Figure 1: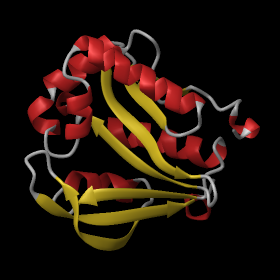
Figure 2 (figure 1 turned 60 degrees about the vertical axis):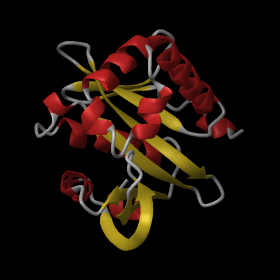
Figure 3 (figure 1 turned 45 degrees about the vertical axis):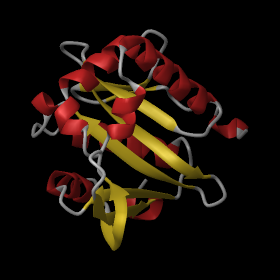
Figure 4 (figure 1 turned 135 degrees about the vertical axis):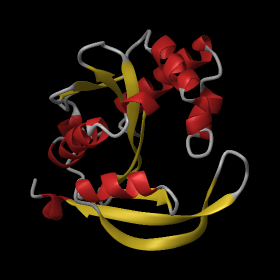
Length: 191
């Protein structure tokens, strides 16, 4: 355990959202988010869909994410819209290698909130958190070659394309897709 990470914030405020660690009881909200976006998330977030098939299992998923946070294995945030207090998305820092230190980002947003800058806002808060509170040196963002919206968000947040990986990702339906890898270092971010 890294004691210097103990004071890391569990809630990040943006202009329109609270990006916070999941808490006990958030499983119902997560299940509803996943259920409302099932067809949209089936290709690239099928692992989360499979982990949240009902409210009880979604609560188990939430508690596993809380435990992983406390064990400093990964950091999973829910994105809660300010006005409605509704869970509208998720951002995760995963595949953490404390020896470098580096981490990988993954995220999604409810379809009805897309195109309004909410994801960029939340992602910028998590990037700041990773670099200034977790002392991460590099963030990676793998995305499907065909996910142009994700490419745009990555570039808006300062990520640069680092390379392409063939047949690196598997869609929910089983098809393999190529991945475009983006990266951002702490130095490049200016933090």
